[in-house]
Amino acid sequence: MDLKSGYPFWAVKNGLLKAFPQLTHDHQSDVVVIGGGITGALIADELSRHGHHVVVLERRDVGWGSSAASTALLQYEIDTHMTELAERYGEANAVLAYRACAEAIGELETLAAGLGDVDFARQQSLYYASNEEDVTPLKAELALRQKHGFAAAWLDRDTVLAEYGFAAPGAILTQLAASIDPYRMAYQLFAKVVERSGEVYDRTQMEAMVPDDHGVTLTLTNGVTLRCQHVVMAAGYESQAWLPEKVAVNRSSYALITDPLPAKALGKLRHTMVWESARPYLYMRTTCDGRLLVGGDDDDEDIPKRRDARVEEKAEGLARKVEALWPMLKINPTFSWGGTFAETDDGLPFFGPHSAHGPRVHFAMAYGGNGISYSMIGAKLLRALIEGREHPLAELFSFQRLAKIT
Image (cartoon, rainbow, N blue to C red; front, top):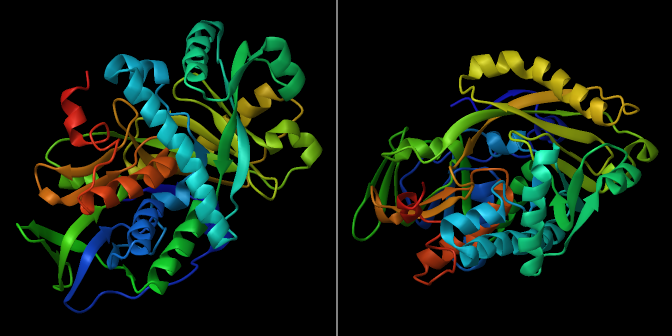
């Protein structure tokens, strides 16, 4: 599956940081993680830090799938409003999901501090109303968050213009958000896994998976057999191929990044990620070296060649949208790219076993705009399931939720 187009910035910036070996002999392990992106890295790190022997398999080079194309906005704010989740699953579950995402940012910060050199930076988040009709729903969203202790404030039209320099009928300003280099962080986490006697193999692809009452037997495309107690399917958007039903819709999203811009030109954008209430939404954030990263203009295209052909046009369109908000800010797309992403109907992820494969095969589908935050949550949730413990989000984030989705 071709997951990206153009020149994703993280791969250009970092290059191929390390080549891992192929698995060429029959082997065994406690847990096998399928997928060498940031999701697989966070899960493998969590398991290996708590005494599990982990083998990671990646069919490409590590980090070369969707992680290389991620724009890596770390937010507790889910693409689906807390108010909507409350209507679907009850207020308690909605708050639980949002609070878990908030805690995940702090956990990611702690992990990043232990790794170093992954460009983790705290940010504010400005979520602005794209039009007058969105003001009332955003104020209702703010009220529910404030009711449950989330630190957020309403900025009116005049304040948005005075503080951020663009016109919008209003916005929610939150203090809890962050950014990161997901590609570099994945490599750093896998290095830690190897230090703990875990194993990471790239250019190694699974062909068949047979679970039984005592474990799972994997057969690789090179004929090697791998036996384990549990499998975690963390292969991103490709994981859906292992399910009997479609649980998310694949789409394409596009992004650009500029050369470093002067701090004065960026203003408060230097420390504030900005996104809008329209769907699909325009969003932007800066990197640690002062580049502006802009994304959005999502479409339903899921054919790689067509996505490839749209990257330049989409980048120019995104640049013009930013310049429409800030006419004095001239946007030159230094690198631009597109990539596959998936959206679930309710904006929530899926973590855990599916009835098609039994209790020893777990899926890690951190789909949507909160992919990295979801992956941090999922790492702990999956460890709890593997160790036979309960987790407060196990039911809400399970495939059992499909029966409730309307």
